[in-house]
View 1: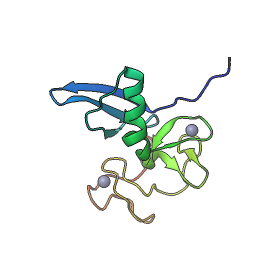
View 2 (view 1 turned 45 degrees about the horizontal axis):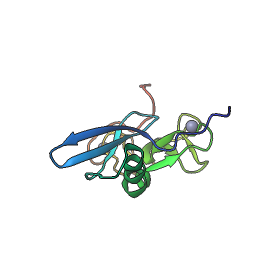
View 3 (view 1 turned 135 degrees about the vertical axis):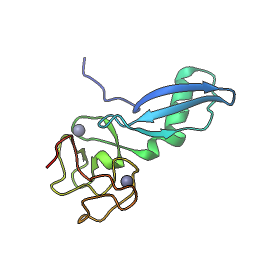
View 4 (view 1 turned 90 degrees about the vertical axis):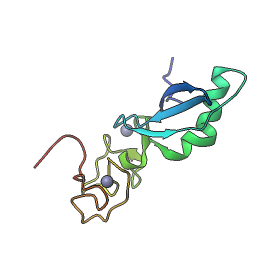
Length: 123
Ligand SMILES: [Zn+2]
Ligand SMILES: [Zn+2]
């Protein structure tokens, strides 16, 4: 009974007049990362697979340690792990709020002004 890593990120299905959209969430920060176009398939499993493979997956990285799917912001590409498993030593390069890439010397996001840091700590 070995625990398989999740095959997709955490998701929600949003149904509207256009069809069923899949929303994929970062498993580390809980932030909504991507909402798909309407997806149609013969079964719910097929739909999820299609939504994930055609749209969702490109926005995520899988932590090699804990197996969670996390957004680029929460992924430490130096070690292929999420920042909960291996935090970056410096300020993150990507804004948690708007996702824009900042230089490693910036303390605040150049686009939205959010402080660039991980977790809830303040200094
Ligand atoms: Zn991890
Ligand atoms: Zn920002």
